[in-house]
Image (tube, rainbow, N blue to C red; front, side, top):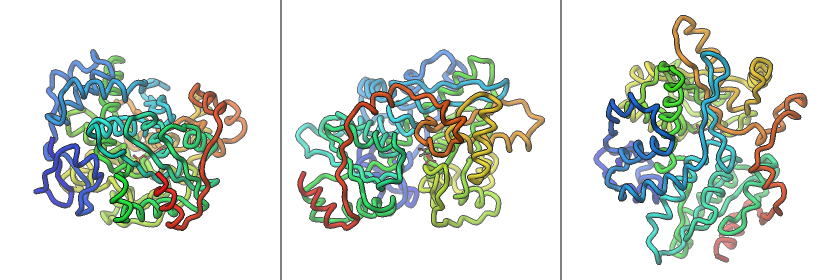
Length: 435
Ligand SMILES: *Cc1c(COP(=O)(O)O)cnc(C)c1O
């Protein structure tokens, strides 16, 4: 596998380089130089394969030559060790549940695969890999649990004090081993700024082997294609072939993976990019003007992104042809008030509890159905997190019905451990220098 930069198509690096650097020096994003198309026979018979078989088929096509196939196979089996079921709600609506991994969010797919890929490419006696990650909630948990116990790696997570939910905080602070949590007296932006300063600090970089684990890493994108293929396989088993996916979007990594799957030959009728009021993409698709904005805080806070970093990947997949993109991607945005109404409506109609991000994907699917009532298709909205991670958003009558998965029961029994820190860089640097 070779990768280029979205800013420079004549660049060509190997997979390991792209994994450890996350981003090319020209500040583009890494994309595969060529996107393999899966053979039609596989797609036609995809209903006969399991998630891990599908994952292996897709990954070996994408990563061709990056590692021996048996190594890739064992990385996949270790990383993707939970299900992604499509749950039917009525005859033509289903929810793709992506929250059955350890951190109860879809980011487990990316983080678990990335951690194992990084560990694989580290040579035996190399310096410990220091992963720095700033989180507003979900990323930190997935990265912490993804790297937990992975040899030769150490993770430092910065999170804003009082601004993540209780379960999110427990996921960051109860791991021990190679996972360190820093509770920062500031905002998510402060956390991110500390991490950025560390990456730009030559002295620190001479001492530690620093890497980021953010959502632009190509090794997080690749495993997210697996569950789109696998969802299609499940639908096919139910005799359904026409599918529309509605994806709750913030940094647009999830939907970028869906579109990559589409380019690899997955038959999908339409992708819906569902956002909250951070609506840079829906505005672009309506007006043709791409204008980023500072992010606004909402109930669906994992989607509070004013400048979606993966958007350039999507434009690159469509060779910057906006019309071609509009044939495949439709986009809608929703306010907090609408999100609450959505949560209530899904509960009334299906007795199903959707997290606020998931509710936005459902709302977008409803909107799409209103505009496309005559056509026969199954609408699948992606559930990106378990509702128990965002309890404060729900009205009491629903909140009390949220069931806690086993992962959470285990967490509540563990002691919480985090170091408190101010927002000045010197404190953070001193902390890292103690390693
Ligand atoms: C990260 C996240 C999103 C947004 O995903 P992107 O890939 O950034 O578009 C949506 N929902 C939840 C629960 C998340 O954690």
